[in-house]
Length: 339
Image (cartoon, rainbow, N blue to C red; front, side, top):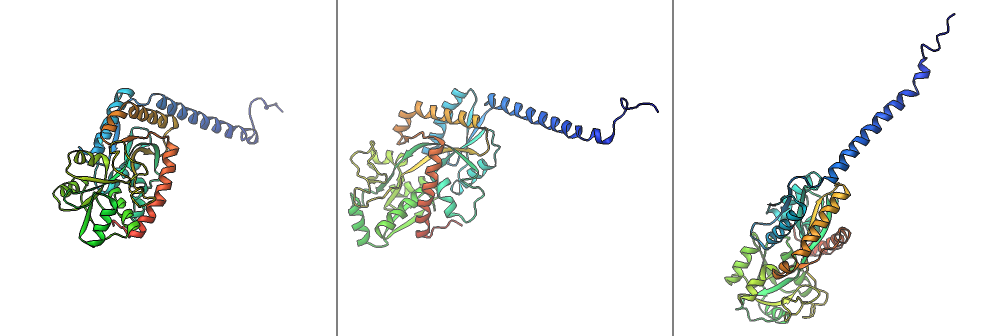
């Protein structure tokens, strides 16, 4: 019988080699994908980047977004285009950001409220501020300042409380909307003082300020950048700062805490986030570009009432977690619901 061992193989001899061939193909595919991803990361950015801003064009926050975008464009060599998506307490902008590809070409300027308050105000959100956003940095901080119409006979927090207690239900404060930082700053004040002050929500801080200037409402708890021009012009009177320390732009104005409400702090901030899942190198590139833009424009931003922060992503994540718990208690106590 002829020896055919050199010409054929049994099934048993072929089986072990088939999985090896498949594994090699799979590894080759993985390596190809990894090489493509690495090339994409090294090439980032190679096209325009979109910065979603959940605020109307022309607002003080829009100035912040465009200032940072302009410097980033120059430093990165690609346009950083501001896309204004105002409305619904920032939900529209946040949802678009969360649904965007995590490739570094979409990021968002967020308020503190979008990532720390909305989840306690809305029963259903189309985004998860913890799971779907990767923190980049808290860009700027700003105090909430308590301002009153000049015709209101109060020049301090004790005088404001005395007036509110003497005229229950007649004093009102305006805000940029239900559940906003301005609203919650007022509710925190009310919860700590038991003052009878009516909240009137507006469709934005601009209309609320206009009514304060027209003496249609008595006061506002408003971000300093939005109120500073009116304060400097004498159109409203600043009686207290809502942060833990006095602000250098208004050094003569005491804090709410030193005015008798120990522990009051309604400080707010704006920062940058992006969709989760981006390669670490892309996250780092965006973060460094934002930090560089903040440093370069620190003096200009300060002139508009912003205090540059520029902390790292982990610090922003820790702040979000801490403040989400704090404001959840205020929201629950005031029974604030937006839907």
